Image 1 (cartoon, rainbow, N blue to C red):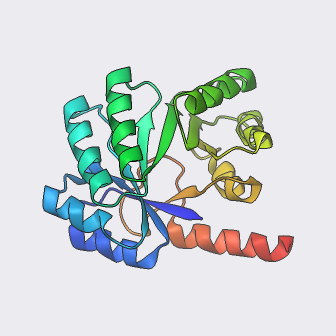
Image 2 (image 1 turned 120 degrees about the vertical axis):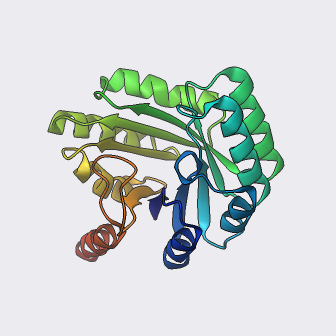
Length: 214
């Protein structure tokens, strides 16, 4: 499944994307939606991930936004592996109370650690209660890509891929190797991460590959 990352602040644009896709990540730290707009978005029939990075607006804002999204229908919530224990457990309890699956995510915007370290991080995600572990690193080489994709050999609920131009191939290969989903950008507007492929192009590529593999 392709998950489209949405950061557009226009509610109508967001809803039009939700109408056209099966799954979407709503970046609440970038959209600045009101409480009513959050309720509208997460009550939509499309499968949604609620994400709110605390970098710019802080942990309190993150907790408020994610709690509202969970209560109004988010299917998944993304929590950073480095979140403090109190914050992580508060979001986790809220998610479990409302039947929302938890993604514990690790992001490395500089490089790709060695395989043993990535495996350790992935195991830590599950120990913290992840329904899905998400491992995202900056890819600089084919070796980095191979390292990331080898994580799928564990056959656990996982999303792992590389950022940057070099990592684009991992975004394509991930769902073919067993990823729960892969991420794509909106066809119009700014991507939320380097190396994201537009939704329509990603859909076309995956459909072509699946035709050849079946």
